[in-house]
Length: 633
Image (tube, rainbow, N blue to C red; front, side, top):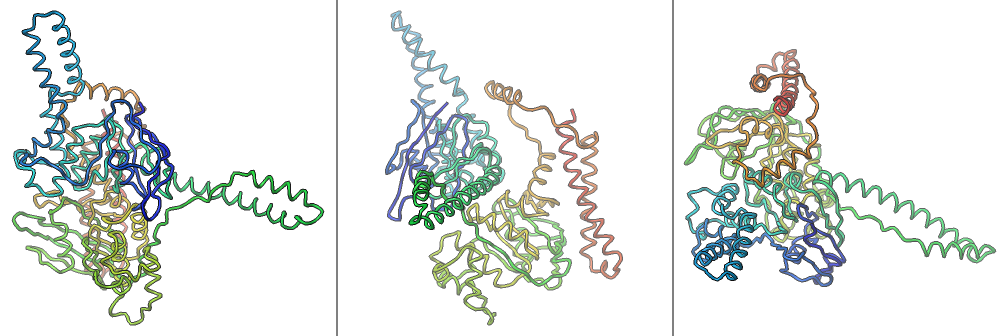
């Protein structure tokens, strides 16, 4: 059902129009991602749709009775409210309807007038049906489900909202919007302030909802899982793409290349016709020239397609380290609680190690220990030959805010560096023209982030340690950074909550799971997710009748099970072999980290081959296990 439509929307400010004459529709059940470079007007458009801003031209139309609500970034709460009571206010209409139902029933029980009795009975039936439809007899349970899913603890329910942090208050705003369940949800960065567990819950929750949604997000993994369509805002227009984020990313290039070919073909034809007209216009063939001019005048000109520029990031060539970059053995660290204990791993040249976990779990502390800036309570870190660390701090404190960009990035000990070389370097990271002479403190978050990455290149380091490098980058800069890391000749350690980034870049993953436990995964985020579901299968609550009906419809629409690619094996057998192979991989990695191995030249290649074979077998076992879980019955 059509819930919202808009047409000929335009909005601009002093700097010029953000968008002009755009239009689209939102239907029930659609989950649309809204993407585009920073500053194109995504938030302005969301405010217009929510009725918080007015367009210069055009209008927004809502289906009769449809409600629309925007996830606000600035929390607003009544004074003195507890967490639970504030969340419950989102269902005030249902609560009021329930109170009305009770009062109607009371009056109905004592009324003797038959006409009044009939009117009250009809009212009671309407209210009862509405409350049953919205499952309003379980309001408190619904509130608990959403608060728990978004990471609130039950012991916090009676705390005053004013005592919560800004991030927690933002999560409460999200909880209220989900509970209110407007017909059209406008979600502006809904996964901000959520850890990965709460983000997973939100993804699953949104997928099951019947409302229409327009979602602005920099979380590509989130978009990939949730949305069914993507709107791209660029060059003052909106273009629609079917499917999830990955489908959009592929289709946009295909469309651009097709349109560019069409534009080039038309341009070539027009150029030839215009050249002919110029040559014969004053000669005997002037009539033919006039005829061709009329034909050109009638042609509908193809506009040259626009393409969102991506910085051409590249970390350049670096000095080669030893085969083993670092060897961490039995590392332990605790403050008021254990952060990690008995953590042992090694990092070989060319590897890209990812580190993930909730805030405060010890990720940054581990980085400081690897850098030698902090000592572990137990264990040691041994660095390899010719290792040169470059550290990207997520707070971007390595850049002096009082200096011009070119001076802040310039390596102090490099007397050979010249201004043009530094401008070329900054240009590779999308900082061009007068931007290089701006004060660092005047840059946007994304510009400052790219300047900090350029500084690492200027330092010529061969081991990058990047703490949340995608925080301030838009989708296009993230893609460029990922490609630069994949092309990097050196070694990289990245702390990130960006699952899409981890999935694309890393080949080994350290996952902080709490209580001092750090899990080593030989693969990327998807590998970890498969193993997590193996050990912690989802234990969801008993479904409601409505959920059962939805599930039956969804199940009926599902295609038949996939065919087997691997021979039948019991899940338990595969799990045992996976554990055995993981142990073997760790043992071989330890051997490769041992200096003694390199005294026996012939053994090095043998152990290296065994290590690569074991890793390849482990990837195959993960896939085999996934198939067995799905098909064994």
